[in-house]
Image 1: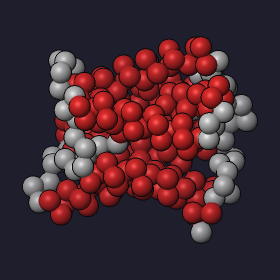
Image 2: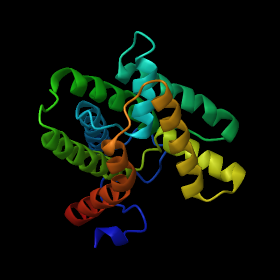
Image 3: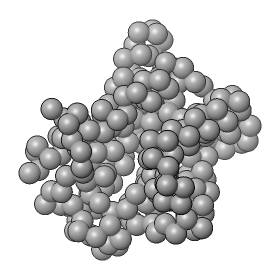
Image 4: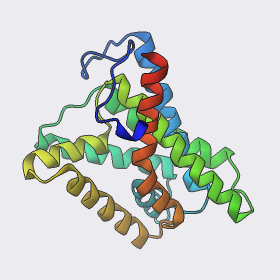
Length: 215
């Protein structure tokens, strides 16, 4: 049933304005909670050693060549992407800024404190759990409606100026960053495929759960 969701639901704590910098406490709380889950899932996927999401592959590859953590690189990539927003005419919201900050912090915390399972089957299970966690966190953060994340905003901006379908724009971005990250030494594996094919349904699950429990 959740796979049939076609739009982001609105609940009692959703912001009416995505550029609201003084949201209700409940809106702010769920935004931060969703982004924390999102970052935790990203970190768990890296820890699983089965691969990483495309943008994390890029961050991981860069971190292997400079003396900075994956979380720090993730944050710097987000800043660089936000700079690309300027010629595209995109405007950041509170969610945009917190997206860059919270996800980066959670990735580093996860890598520091969560051990990698020694058994490959357990690593795969952790990878599946991580993708579900990212999806549910993404669903919660999207429902808060406080502005798109840096990468989502880049996708929207590029789609507007190219008129290409969203799927083509996002797909091109993901393939480009994962290829560059893999070239730099980032880990590409079954976890990367799980993320690529599973993140859509998992975000839909997150949206469904929010709509069901907060309707």
